[in-house]
Picture 1 (cartoon, helix red, strand yellow):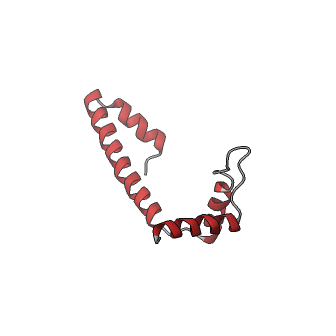
Picture 2 (tube, helix red, strand yellow):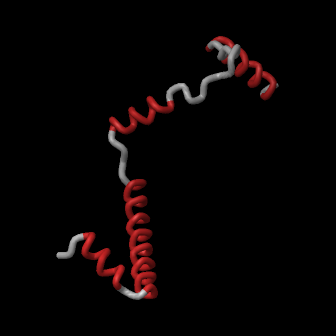
Length: 89
């Protein structure tokens, strides 16, 4: 089996046209392999630790603007009651 350096030395001795063909074939192989790796990665179900890590990274990502205070549960109920009263009045 040839080492990486030996393979490279062999390729460099070839004419430019053949070197380009080799480069193109290697590029196509990398693209095919990369596509399979990406597909496999998206099909794989995340572990609990990975899910927790994602949730921690997203924590605080959607912070409200300064000075904004979210509605209380009571305020939310009032808004819903008003909406339903208008809708079914």
